[in-house]
Image (cartoon, rainbow over all chains, first blue to last red):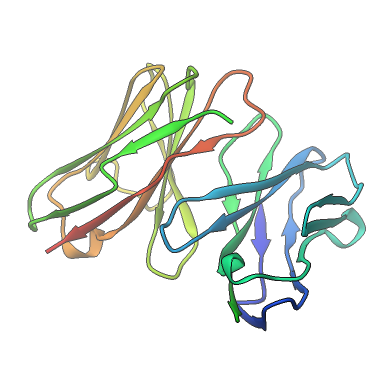
Length: 114
Length: 115
């Protein structure tokens, strides 16, 4: 069975601080995909990144960066110089190749105060 | 990315009535659609998977007679909550993927309140 664990329920930071959201996953599949989504108060899921299991390169997109480590089954997400607009719930998710249904973690609520 | 439109965005209904939620892929053919449910401050849980022209596959614990899913065309899937009760109040969100999709695309979600 697949499982995604986001141990941090809620994180509070002050604007401009860096923050890392942790994600640990479990799967027996050798090919799989990992995702991060942002869910603002409106509820809509905003896609942030997709990473396949064969690509362990870290990725940077603006203030966002992701660290994928198969050895520890982790896919952590870092926001640099956080802003108030980053306040949201962030979900890590997992799917196997060939399937698009996602297994979500429990989410981490990020509160960025001015 | 591809566009998935979900309607309505919110609905309030009386206990015992049925509510239909639509999920449309606007610019691609959705061979597979997924329906998720999210209770307040909780994660998203998959309810069912539907392939166009086939019966939906429900996850364990989801009542198929209560949550009717229809995927009659490559651009439309509907979820009908039958005989809704207050405990069905939740955020329902669909996602859709096509044959060549690298990922599924989410609708905006529907907030259902049963009073």
